[in-house]
Amino acid sequence: MNVHASPRPVIADRRFTLATDLDGTFLGGTEADRRRLYDWIEANRDTIGLIFVTGRDPEFIMQMCRERGLPWPEYVVGDVGTTIAHVRGDGHVEPIPELEADISSRWKDAGAAVREALDGHPGLTLQPTPFRYRVSYDLDAESFDAGAKDKVADMGLDWLISDNRFFDVLPKGVSKGPSIRRLVDHLGIPEARVLCAGDTLNDLSMLISGLPAVAVGNSERPLCERLDAHEGDQDRIYRASAHGAAGILEAVDAFSLHDTPKGD
Image 1 (cartoon, rainbow, N blue to C red):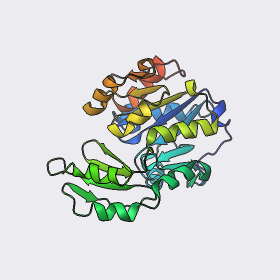
Image 2 (cartoon, rainbow, N blue to C red):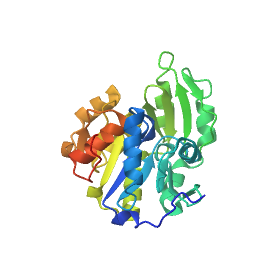
Image 3 (cartoon, helix red, strand yellow):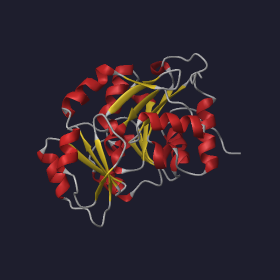
């Protein structure tokens, strides 16, 4: 299987690149909205680049592309920014070593120490999937003891709560925002041609990274509150009315990034 069946211009030469979260964003909205977005991308692969920026691990992402008919991305920023990878023609991901070296050095093989420190901590349940440079937990908001934040900080690492049900431990200074910026710079994509899209707090660093960005209409309230409080360039952050996939297309129109499909 060749997931990039036809030759395409390098991503830096394309008119527009979408860097999008998955759950609630690229996968959000109605089935008709998603199909409209996906078909539009596939019909314009010579002028549209696609990067998935997600908390999901890359192999799960590739499985979703195979089973759910998603457009295949050229690149993936996965694992809440701790993986930066190229998608090969055979549908597998290939980490980009020069971009991940700094992430690895910041992590310092801390996984075992994190798991030990948070073992049995109230409100946290360790997720079974092993990750290279992060440790992730399911969070029960009612029983969660906020002392976990101090434990992580004392280890010189970062914590991140998203959707009020996930708790991630990450290398210091590593998240979706710094990683998508690193990838965009590495690929030479003009910043004005990128749109970052998200809906939860783990997308905040990406939405305030200085790249054009959209918070889709179904974004969680804590994300919207943090965006309201952010003193950065608000002209670069669009608040969509439409949910999920439709909100992405709304923002593409608002920023005049590419011609979009018109309604029937």
